[in-house]
Image (cartoon, rainbow, N blue to C red; front, side, top):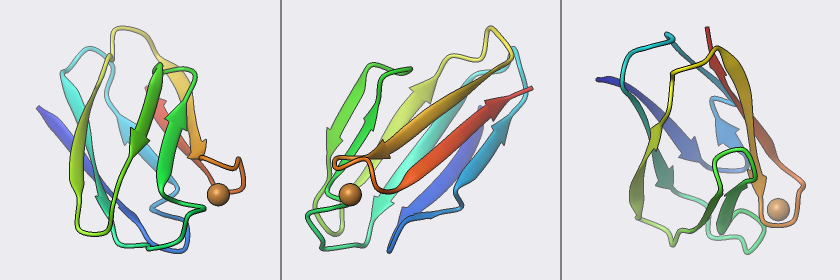
Length: 86
Ligand SMILES: [Cu+2]
């Protein structure tokens, strides 16, 4: 299992994560930001809509069947992150 961690704190740290195509993958989001802005993580590409409170950690499995770029963003579309499968 490929695992990448993203800390939510004044944005996404890191903003881009990479996975190898064809191997099971997950991202774990750690919420450290109390702002309403970053409360939600949304991704149309992943059909994802998470609401995270400070202290929450949530894993999201990522389908790596195809090489592609997946975008995600905060609830207000101000902060953006990217998942690259290559
Ligand atoms: Cu926002």
